[in-house]
Image 1 (cartoon, rainbow, N blue to C red):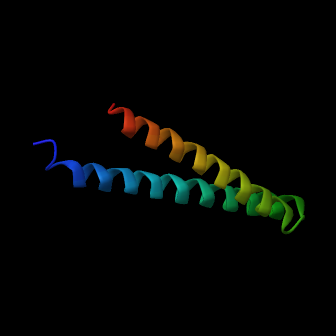
Image 2 (spheres, rainbow, N blue to C red):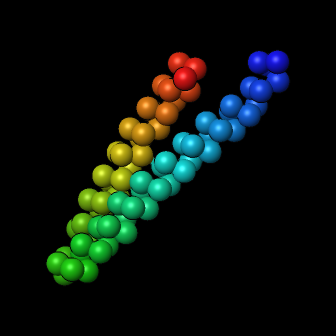
Length: 72
């Protein structure tokens, strides 16, 4: 029974990782672009937002993998 649900757990893990990485990167980019527009500092905050979004996405991904690995 447990072996038959294994592909579904893998699909759930992959979709969770994809949505967390994509969402955090997009929030960082659009938040940075919004700040650039408000402060008239064109590529600075977009790049900072991209890097912050990427690091937040990687952190969330590691937490998700750890949670899936522990079986919770």
